[in-house]
Image (cartoon, rainbow over all chains, first blue to last red):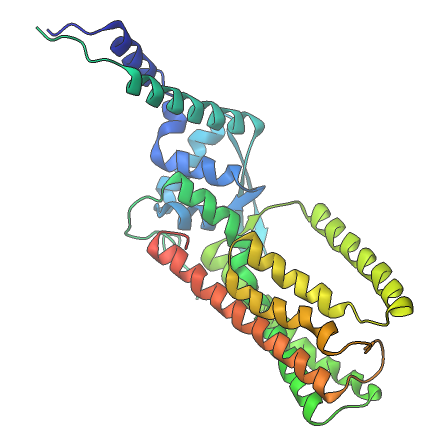
Length: 117
Length: 201
């Protein structure tokens, strides 16, 4: 097995430590969009992500369980309306995630490849 | 017919976070088409007034505005169900901003009326269109902005107030509302393209 440099190991550890809850593409899109507004409804998020309703519901449920978003169900006239908003915890998780990705990119750029064999 | 649960899902690649953020920010302003019926009404009203000036006692004909407002609501509901709802600020904050703008306007209008005898209504509407143009780089909103901002220059010393506007001034307002309606329709075109192409242009 090829030995790895300490820097490379650190990069891989950082990748492994990435918050998968936030990093998943659909959830990252949802959180980023919600961070740009006060609230958005289910239809808009579905349009934005192009996900099926069931898939989007599952992603929202995971984010809600983690306390990153709040989901409010109500009615607009006779039509059901689900409104979603990001929490302070969600904003912080998103900021931390972007920072971590940025640091990861920087450390990967600076990494020198280890000698194989 | 009400859209099905998955009608909003499309067969296209996932939007990038940056694109999603941009579209979320710009979406509320792309919904301007919901006010197009009122803009069309005012365009027709002012052009008709330019051809056959109506005396002040004909203002009761403004009840004709009601169908336009109903059309606004219908278009708004259509947009809600098709593209969804995004709120960028709380209702209280929105109302507070409108109230502050109105108070500032009437205060400045009062000063302008007594000192320079210039109607600032054109400036107000011009600034509204200018904000639309600059805030999200929708430069076609500069057309109604320029038309409205030129109003006090083209028609100096004409306080519209509660008197009948001159035919030329009515035609100018008709042009403004026509430009507003066309810009709203262009907004709608961008809105549809943003969601269909998967990229906010």
